Length: 85
Image 1 (cartoon, helix red, strand yellow):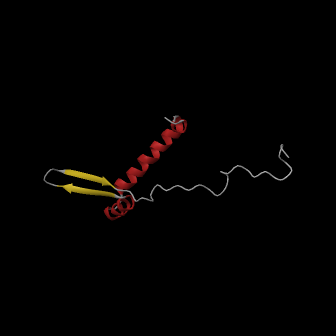
Image 2 (tube, rainbow, N blue to C red; image 1 turned 30 degrees about the vertical axis):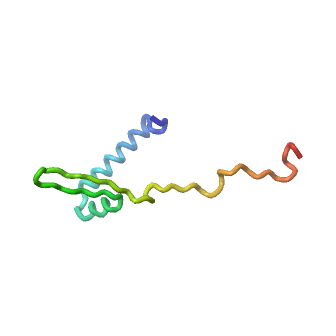
Image 3 (cartoon, rainbow, N blue to C red; image 1 turned 135 degrees about the vertical axis):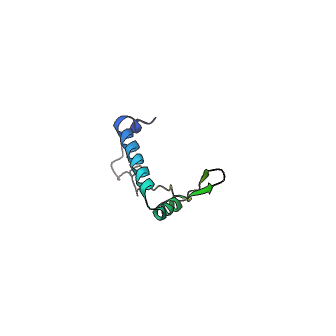
């Protein structure tokens, strides 16, 4: 387990997830449908079997991450500061 998930931070993350689940559980059905659609969740109820099938197809861009401009390239040497000049 990554160190950032140990101890208190893990408990905070767990509590936040539980809070979000409870808010969603208590939400208006139309609001739930909007949230489910946004994350690509489709629920199908089969009454004869009393079964709910869940399919998750997230949008391809849902987990896109961005790196801030700059900071990844090594610094450009300033003329006259190199040890080889």
